[in-house]
Image (cartoon, rainbow, N blue to C red):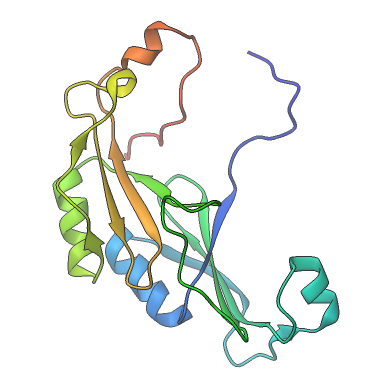
Length: 178
């Protein structure tokens, strides 16, 4: 199948965190993330000023204190940002406009959720069966929240899904681990 879109896929998801080191430790412990590099290490001069405020639509007086890229399994990276700003709000709730969560594919839902909780995350409920066009044995999802409020969905769909009978297109799924 060919496409006229220049987009190849999602490269990374950016997340603002209150403490870069604590968030990194959480993602390493909870999701097995690995640190790739620091774009702006703590202790370096912050990125700030009118040009940055204009480019990123920051509130006046905001600055980036630290940035780090994490590798998360076989999918997009996570880019963590620690900002200083005159006014910061908690993350959006799923019913608010804007990016509301990211999802991680897991082989073992119970083990993944236990690891997430042990790292300090909050699991909202027990895993639920996926909706009708995604249902199948073992196909499930569960929402959870990182300690600073970012919502993360855990999802697994080892069985064929009913939508596959309606289209030749398939959703992207991380490859099996060796």
